[in-house]
Image 1 (spheres, rainbow, N blue to C red):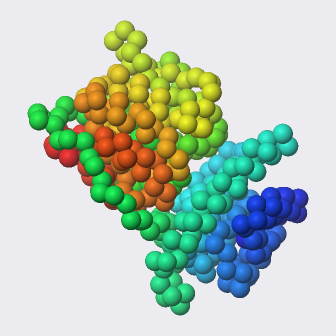
Image 2: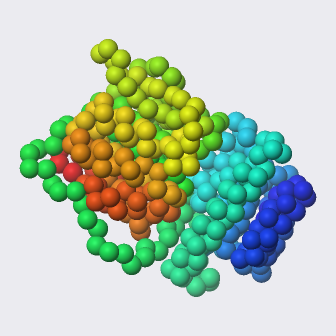
Image 3: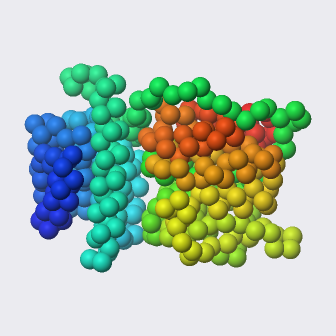
Length: 363
């Protein structure tokens, strides 16, 4: 289902998807109200929902669509504006699965089309797995703040890093990587970790474009009780503060005299991502060594996985979110596959684990 008040956007999106031949656009709607009226009969697996529309916008339509079609994966289409970024994060908290910013210029439409098709294909698989676990439609519940996770697949037994022979070093920094489903997961983890994080800096890479990461930092500040902001080049990395990689720039850290400072660069994409988790994990490991506690949360792809053994080799610990609670078990699954993770935990337990380690206790 494509929902957008722009006839041009609806037409292009429909054509791009149907040219792939494995998609069928079952409904094209010009408002959220029209989408709500049609969603039961059209039975979409994926709903592409514009955030800002007259009559009924995406924020208002989202919970109604999820109530009528609980297993649907909803992709929010958002404008590159401060207001659009804030509304998009609100939609993710309300149960949207992912978001995709609309291109600001026609020249960006090729990249937008590629990203759109890739995300719809991934979300269709998530929707189908949810449907296998969903109760009958009559028993469907109202959507919760965090979307249902995809069903885990049968996989080989998980191989973890060997337990250290000596007591591990006290946590001196927390580093987190995330992508699809990440804003919701970050909120849950940091809120659960609570005041225990007051003694360590928090380094975050969430795959988001420029503009959206500032809204994410504000969202984490107000929702989790921490001081979060977009990282700035050359600023000191201080305990008790969270630094979010700005969209479109890589975030790393380095020692400068007796200080630890943020480094931002506009280099090429790493693992098809910018910002990428990989350089942040690697440089944080070089600075903090055995004191680094790294967490890999839900997300598509394998970004950051190649840095996981680097963290482990320096004596640091890596925890990956488990498959059952991940929206997409791409990034955490790739991290687990390295065999260098110390633990694989449900999302609900990761914040508690961080709090224990920050207090000097065992995982």
